[in-house]
Length: 488
Image (tube, rainbow, N blue to C red; front, side, top):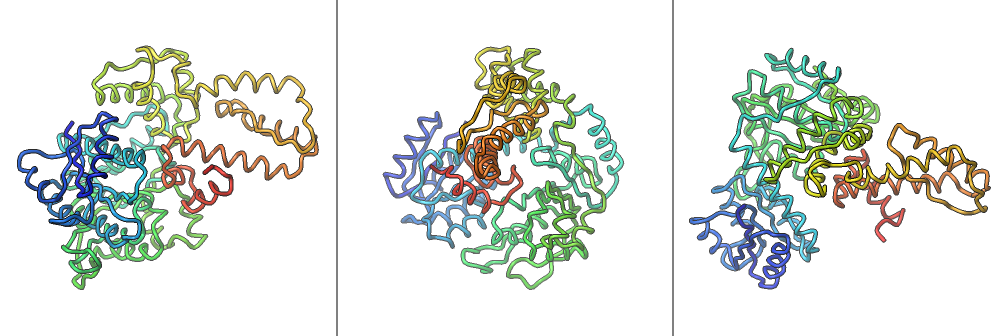
């Protein structure tokens, strides 16, 4: 892997990042100014570039623009001050992977750089195999129905709406629809409308003219122009801001749009595939999604089943993910024992196929032997194995007496489907019989805390992603974390 380049005129920043990245086994090359970086590009190139905004001899934004001209796929992380909003917006508009606010937490900075490296490696694989779509597997009836629908749509240009839970593979379906369509020779462009700040999303979709806002130093084509002649995949369309829905409806109606700050209409010949985990009908009733846009998108609807609805596919998917992780890491693929496989197949997977893939990657790295036993599975599965017999015993034995006013934590949840609701009822009855006050608030707070902690653990502390997986707003999860004392 190529080194990570760090550019900052502050020697202490360079030193801290060099040491932190070296501890994580990353090769690092440091520069004090943008001029040296551009000169070094003649002989070498980085895996990821981390650059300060304000430096003598050339700003980080100027460097970003020049880097993107030479290496458009290179992830660039721009470091900026908390209050420097214009610089942050300009960094995103210029194609930055992310911006890092100073002063920064070093472990979080390293994690961000790691994500950028992973993105860079994925881009490299995609560029080597531009026509290679990840294989979709599934013998379950619901998946076979989906495959048949993709086949029927293979010669169609019609708009498609894909629904399904987060992590179920909606983008894979969109890519399959594109690959098997008359537009397969055109570009496939994907954008997650929930992952981009509202102030930036309009420019991401429609582009902007030079001088349209502070930092817009050049004209930039948006995703609609980038996808001309191909397919534009709008993921999490249910989270699109209401005012942008109006602009999207106009494009879908007549194929015309204006760049931000522009006065000349642009035309784009694009097939739109949208996806959401939201209930759009309910959002229409709630007044937060336009009904006319809903009907424009809902021409053909494909529902992607959750992984718990296709448990028979779990063994073959697990084997495929283990093989993929082994190839990526250059190691021999792990094998699953029958008890471990049975345990995987019984798990409920709130994160769906993405969660199963993450578990298989974890096993490739962490399992101590080539044959994975049930005890080698990740903590969330192993703890359930211990809790299940206890829960069964509790269902047989009479509940222990509980002193009035005592608040007890509910027992660890067994595998979904084997009685966690019964455990909840048992705990509630024990508290009610003991005369414990505010039972509703007590159990609700414990339940919400467990959900949020599990989501934060699954996303390595990334709150926005945790909120998306739970199906709640980012403001909601921030408020809950504060109210429940989870920041302590």
